[in-house]
Amino acid sequence: MQLFDLATGGVTLGTTTPKKSIPVPALGSTALDWVNGITFATAISAAAATAATGSTAPTTGLVWNADYV
Image (cartoon, rainbow, N blue to C red; front, side):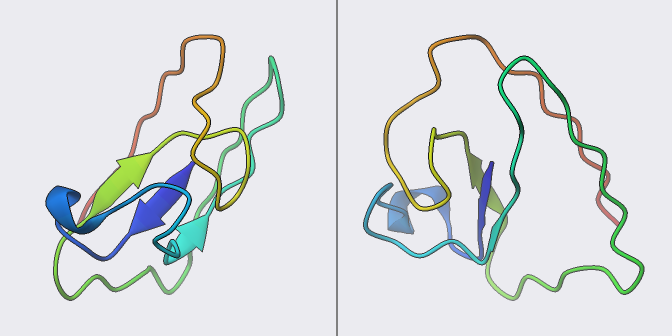
């Protein structure tokens, strides 16, 4: 998963550097809890790709749940 501090139209996968990349193993899951949180000044945009800064979509479906405070 890639998280961006930009509006969706401002993101070009594979070119725009994500604010945070979250590794998710194939056929696995990842649970994260950021104690101090992550600050986004503009917007929160998310994308799934096969590499931390890549643009290739995963070949299997993805379910992503997030809490926003």
